Image (cartoon, rainbow, N blue to C red; front, top):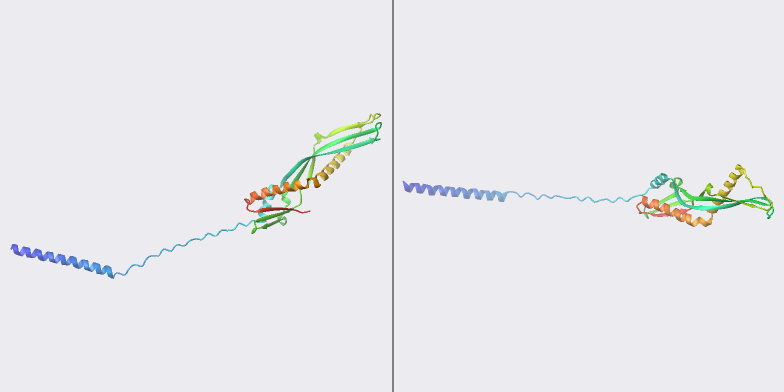
Length: 219
């Protein structure tokens, strides 16, 4: 009985071993025969950034000028003396009144009058050309600084008098003389230089110094 039990155990062990070998061989064959999975290709598309070139338009400049309206380029003081003569020009009958007027001359540029026809932009060369007339002086008389002096001969006791209308006409003529003086050649270069500096400052700030500014004065 014991002998049969041992024989049975050996037979069972042999069967189990054969079964394990069979399963292992089939698994290996199945794995070898299986079609390989094709590799997955992940394509990456790089986005190429397109750098847009900044283009400056005339409208940007005119809008800025319209916002500012007017700039004062330079101020200077100016005087003009006038002699009103009555009587004769001698030491006995001379009767004169000397009046010294003082004024402020202001050179201003009205930017609102600069339109697109006065502007040329080259976005390739990065240049801005502005065509303007030279600013002209406007005069304001400082009445409180007006000085009066009488020149009388030995035999004159009366005063030189003017009517309000005559005095107003005199002031008008004085202002015209002052304006002619300031708009002459003496102040020509400094007015142009200050005008260029003022416009360059505005446009350089507007364009972040990316453009060369050229100011051209036309007659």
